[in-house]
Amino acid sequence: MNTMRRFLLRLLNAFRPEVAEDDLAREINAHLALLEDEYRRRGLSPEQATLAARRAIGSVALAKDRHRDTRSIAWLDDLRRDVRLAARVLARSPGFTSVALLTLALGIGATTAVFSVVEGVLLRPLPYPEPDRLVRVFGPPPTLAGIDGLPSRMIDLPSQTFETLRLADRAFSHVTGYMPTTMTLTGRGDAVRLVGSHVSAAAFPMFGVPPLIGRGFEPKEEAAGADAVVILSEAAWRRYFNADASLIGQLIVLDGRGESSSA
Amino acid sequence: MSERVELLQGTLDLIVLRALSTMGPQHAYGLASRLEQVAEHPLMLNQGTLYPALVRLEQKGWIKGTWQRTESNREAKYYAITKAGTRALDKQAERWRRLAGLVDKLLLGDA
Image: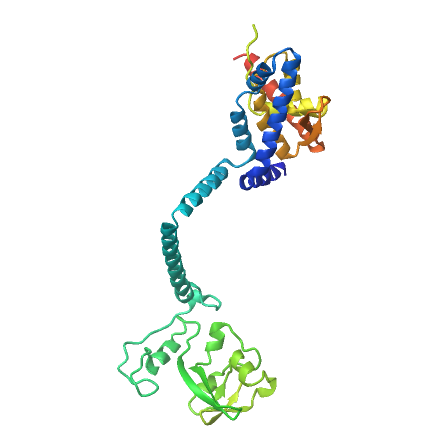
């Protein structure tokens, strides 16, 4: 308890030395005065008394130094003094200082920006349970046409490969195929272009993210020709559908086709 | 022939605490001269070496310093022992006695 108290007080004295310094000077002067009185009482002349007093106290500078070391944290004290000196020297050559500061600012800013991107894209784990178990499987470079009929910039897997992977249920707990897509929503005010993805039914269990309301996809809905079913993102639901909970099971029109919203 | 006795580190704190406990509030000068009187030995103390001990004890909360006037109407900082200081004094004194006893035994005992 008192070590903590002592530590905090020492910290305070390291950052605000003036208080203790003034008090100490006052105390030492008072001490000297008392000593002088005593020596004068013993019959010495004023000058002799002063000398004797100083001798009795020993080196004042040394006493102050020792006091400073005890009451404060030595290296912090030195650090503070060095920083003050550096600031004074730098202030004397503003040209150099501003160039140096500018360089530092640019360097730090650029590094921070780069790191932020790297951290977000590469280092931060995906916000799903056990993200280190999530794997993305690539195919060979595309020679096939992509969604728009143009050479695909995404690396697609032929659906054969996907089916094969799906059968390897001892290697993978879930296998999901996905194909990004955009669709136009009409029939609800202005037409809106929505960004989304075709996914297998296994997607929601795999990511451990159950829909807020409604249900996920069912495997039978993967069959071609099954009722087109849509799961809306919460943002889209709030923005374009007024967070209407009764939307489940209703039809919405995407790309001119009716799809029933399941969540 | 009197020699100057060197104080072991840490014992100065104990001595100051004890002195303040028995003599009541003192300022640094009073403390130093009374210590010399009682010890009957010139302690290896410049009066200035009391200051680190005083600040250490004050920071631990074992003594408290207040500015007051002496009889000769000089100002001086008087130090008084606190309740925590009294408790600490008992503990430290006990520890010292035990240590001293142990060292005595080791020095005087059969090698």
